[in-house]
Image (cartoon, rainbow, N blue to C red; front, side, top):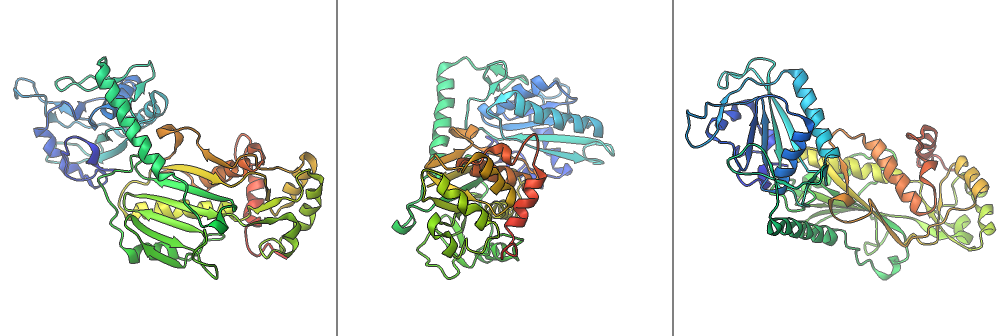
Length: 453
C-alpha cells in the first residue's frame, strides 16, 4: 500500500520507502483534509474517529510526535513546527491502540499502515531514540466506516477533529462507493467455465488480495522470468511443483501439468498485475467402488480401514475425495503469495477469500487412523453444499484480513479446517480452543508421499 489512494500524495513515495529526512516537507504541509498532527498519544476512542473519518473521505496521514507551529507564524494553516517525537514505550502503546481501534471500534475495519521513523535527525531536531509515527489511511473502498457508537465521521478542511456526517447525499455517495467495490470483488470471485469433463470434480479456489479494492495505484513490477523462478523454487513437503507458465493480459499463470492434458482443471496459481492472485486446487475423487484400483487412493495405508465403513451409509456408492495434500497446497499458495508481495517491496498484509465448488454428496478421505475412528464413532461425514465460501457475506466483511505477522501455518490449518467442514468434518475435530497439535502432526504425516505402502 502506498499513498496512492489519498487525495494528495505529499511524500511522493510509498510509506515503506519513507525515511526520517523525508518528513522535512511537513513544515510546508498544513493540517486539513489529508493531514493531522498530534504531539502526544490520544485515547483509543479518538483514534477510531480519525481512522473512520480518513477512510470515509479522501484518505490521509495521522502523524504523531509533531508539534504544530505557532498559529500566528503562518496565516494559512497549522503546519509542522517542532518534532519532539515519541519515546519507545509510547510508540508501542500507540501501535497497540491503533490496532485495537481499527479492529474493535470501526466497522468495517479500515485499512491502514504504520511506520515509526527513529531519530536522530538533525534537520528535524529529532533526538536519538525518539520517533515520529506516520499512520497512512487510504480512502476506504467499503464505506461507510462507522465508529462504535454508530456515527459516521468525516474530515473538515480547517479542523483537526473529525465531525459526524449528517448530509444524506454524502452518506448515499459512501454506499454507492461500496457497491462499486463489491461489484469488482464479485467479478473477481466469479466461477470459471471449466471444460465439460471437469464440471463434476470438486475444487477449491483461494483468492488473495493485497488491496481489496483491486484498483491500487501500485502495479506489479515482477517480470515473467522472475515469476517463473518464484514458482519453480524447490517445493517444501507437499507443495505443488509447477511446470507450465504463460502470460495473459492481467498477469501470469503457473500450472502443474505433468502428464495431464492442458485442457483440464489442474493446480493453478494466477498472479495479477494489481497484486492479487488466485490459487485453484482440484481435488482427486472417484467412486468408492473404484478406490482400490485408483492410483490416487490405492496405496494409502488407512484405506483398508476406511472402505468398509462406506456401505453402512444409505447413499452408497459415494464419491470419495482425497484431502491429504490439501493442507500442503494451501500452505504453499499462501507462502508463494507472501513471497511475491515481498519482492514487490510492499507490506505483506493481505486479504483472503475461500470458495469451494462441487462438494455436494462427497465424502472426504484422510489417511490417518484417528479419522477412521471418528467415522466409526459418528458415521460418515458427507458434503451437503454444492458451493460454499468463507467468510460468508459480501464486501470487505466477507474477506479474512491477514496481517504481516500472521503465522502462515496456523492460517493454512484454519483454512483447511473450514474447507473440510463443507464436506462434513466438524471444525472442532481440528480446532478446539486452539490448534489440535496431534491432528496437525497426523495431517503433516499423512500428506507426505512416503506415508504410502
